[in-house]
Each structure stands twice: as structure tokens, then as C-alpha cells.
Image 1 (cartoon, helix red, strand yellow):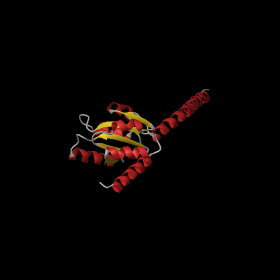
Image 2 (cartoon, one colour; image 1 turned 120 degrees about the horizontal axis):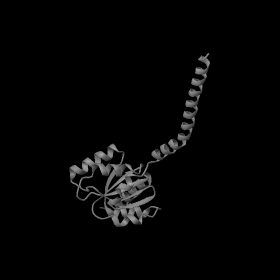
Image 3 (cartoon, helix red, strand yellow; image 1 turned 45 degrees about the vertical axis):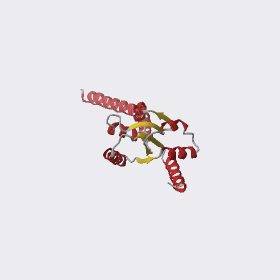
Image 4 (cartoon, rainbow, N blue to C red; image 1 turned 90 degrees about the vertical axis):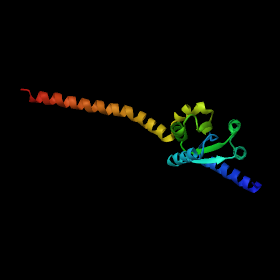
Length: 171
């Protein structure tokens, strides 16, 4: 491969890393063509971009960025596929659903400005809430006291109305 081609790939990888907020490094060594195609289809359904990369080119792309990605450098061995996403927990849930006997295995992930190294971090990654889920939780918490007050007022009003009606019907 010519040096110009390598530089173009490095620049494109760096641009993609900046474009997406989160990425996962997975071990695609033991995957055959059918398993890789199935994973690609699942990625397409989940709006995750999957790219098979050379480790040295990914290493140089990570070095070219402003952020410090040095904790990930040790994971760049074997066949590496990168899953890019804008929602931190989607690839983790997809990997958990698709993985059979640990294949494909999680090498590392960069999600929510944190590093997750090793396959044992998959459960932690699935429990990360997306921005929309956090907003929904906050809204539910904010609405809860208001709903309680409204239901108390409504039930009190019905009770009061029932007592007045009963008193009005008495002789």
C-alpha cells in the first residue's frame, strides 16, 4: 500500500472518530465470512457503522487526534473491527445479542468519554443510559410530585363532592 493511501485512510479514520461520539473495538479474528456478514447486517439495523481496520493505521489515527487514547493502544492486536455509534449502549446490546461463545469479543470501548478495556466490561456498557433515556428519567422524576399532588386534589374533590351530595340529599 502506498504512503498516500495510508495517509488518506488515517485521515478518514480520524474524521470518523471525531464524527461519532463513541466507538468499540471488537476482535474479529475467529469470525468467518457468514458471521461477519451477519454482524454487518445487525450493525446496519442498529445504525452502527462497522469498519475493519489495520491496527497500525488505527493507532496512527488515534495518535493524530487531540484526545489521549493511549489506554486503547494495548488492545490493537489481531484482527480489529471498529463499531462507530452516536448512542453509547447500542453496540454493547447488539454484541450481547449476537455474540456466540464470546465471538466476536469486545477488546475495548470509548463511550461517554470513558475507556472500557476487556470483554468483562460488556455488562457495564449495556447499562449505560443514552441521552434520551436520561432525559426521560429526569422528566419522569420531575413529573412525579406534580402527578401526586394532582391526584390527591382530584380524589379530595371527588370525596368532598360526594359528601356534599349526600348531605344535600338528606332531609
